Image (cartoon, rainbow over all chains, first blue to last red; front, side):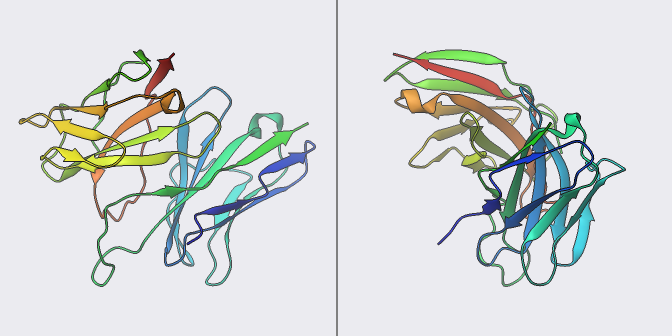
Length: 120
Length: 112
């Protein structure tokens, strides 16, 4: 029973390039969350997605950042025209669907090991 | 979601119990108390959660005061591998908002 899988684990980009981070949730999970952790700082919520829908993007920077969770395939966090300040660890988490038929829902989020972006 | 207050850091001797406090005086009746931890450079890890009764699992115990305004996470026999940042979070379980809001947490240093 694989956990949340993130790739790449490490990504190096030059300023102005694009970064794409992928997240495969746990089997049966339809909710995905992205968090950012700047060096020596805490975890900051970015976006919460369900399949094909963005539910809460209140933590996403207004420009250059976008996220998607298509019907098939992993969730993607995309950063265009990266700058040095984007260097951080990006964590993805998943949770099962809520509501009827979802079984026991503890409200627990399951985190991946993160993708570390370095912008040169 | 209600806010929490935790001490920024604590030390604990290896093999002793680590008691990590958390204040959540504005917690609502339907909000749970969750504890997560983040070991250096790793993804956050769920530890335990509870509503009003004390809870115990293989990792820790959670003691919630009767008025639910504070709680304590207890690691009964701390090891060096328990050195981490511990986060206390309150939120509604099964909430459609889903997200967890992490504060600064408590950095627990377990010393030999």
